[in-house]
Length: 420
Ligand code: HAM
Image (cartoon, rainbow, N blue to C red; front, side, top):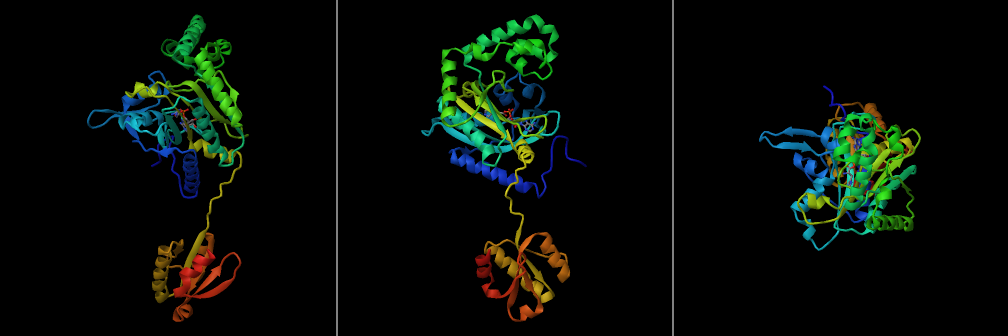
């Protein structure tokens, strides 16, 4: 049996990298003062229909939706924002005096997409959401955090693209302009886009099939339709990015694949050579109407998410080696029945004292045990033979230098704590 298409097993050797990256992201969240939230992996389907949007590819094509035994329509979460906002509303976090509410999450998301390198059906997102502030400075904070997520891990070939999708009024005007622009060539567009033109014309700009249609080149840009409020807001976000020394390119075609966005939208791309066809590492933006759409009080919000899969691909493409300690601190080599009995006690005592240690469980000979210790990149091998046992001693061999010393067993913990 094999794991389902688009999923993967993470085995020892790889899980250490994930742990390292996840730790760094948690530490980063703490530095920016975002606190962890954990929401369910499945939700009522309606949450994503209302939250992510009925016209998006995610909702129309990519959700893992099923009826549970109680005949409720359930969906494996395709993203984190809708769930976080649902939880924010359900638990009335808006009532807390500490606003904005700044949250982060790490966990698996599910999308029925065509799997390829960097596109999985189960993938892990790290994301943040800041709810309760309409200050453009927090847009810059979220973008800075997103950039830092890569930079703290040593990535350099990054590109930040930003855009403004404007407020409701700007979007309405842009929407009409798009309809006017594309309607004369409607028949030439793909079936999806013909529907999009009616339901959500902005989505047409994001179409992969019609990307090269001549009408795409001179499609009306949202930036030409921003009203004064939206323009001022966007200028402020850029000013904050400038003072923070964050470089960006304004990309008027950046529309994002989810419906809840307005004002700021951004994506971070890798331009590392050999990164592959998919270059987007993460994306996010502002979603000022979402809390209300999901039944809460009018509350602005902004956030972003990245996937660890693509982050690890970028690290590989840039040749960044994570400083993961693959060594084992101690390995006890014991020979004979009495020594093995004593070894079990020593191993147990060392572990209780917080020292990492392993031993043989395969009845290996002396040489085999040493070989095993070598393969495990052990720093210190502790040898317990008849001779040592009779004197209540143990030999401690430094595997790097080859030096060996004899230590009284009752001094071993202190000794090892000293040299480790
Ligand atoms: P998204 O652009 O759909 O946004 O996904 C964010 C990131 O998740 C992508 O840039 C990509 O790195 C990763 N990703 C998406 N699909 C896959 C996949 N099939 N395999 C591997 N990685 C994938 C959102 O999900 C929004 N909730 C982000 C957000 C948070 N906006 C505001 N707050």
